[in-house]
Length: 200
Image (cartoon, rainbow, N blue to C red):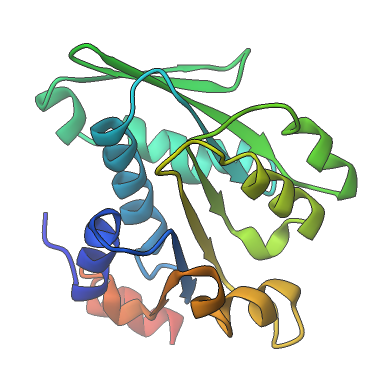
């Protein structure tokens, strides 16, 4: 599988000094799939018996955008990874060799959603379409990442220059020790020219 330069930066993010990764930009630009892959590989390479969170606007959207694509990545079974998703507990359990980690799926649909993630200790969080989630939910998710070495992963299509996430994270990545990558459809080598023309 070929990766673009920016997709490779996502894959290499865990080896950098940054504690957060923020990817924003166009739909179909290839950021979500590579970020999900990098997130899981990082977690399994650095932790054992830890909890992680995968958050979306809803549980269903997180499963559709992150969990299902991960379950279909042929790299994992070929390299000794076992992935098992439980619909009842909304938990993806990943095992490789003697290591096992749990990835809980949460939906941040409204202001009361922050209560869903209270109480859990996390080693990392991936927030898919973070601009669609209430600030209270996002900040509660970040506060749960208290395990040493934890990292924060965000992707979004900002709704406008007045959105709180745009002003707080995209304009001020240095304040959060974050790596900011802006994506266009040209950063997705999987798209054909015909598909690109359709979106432009």
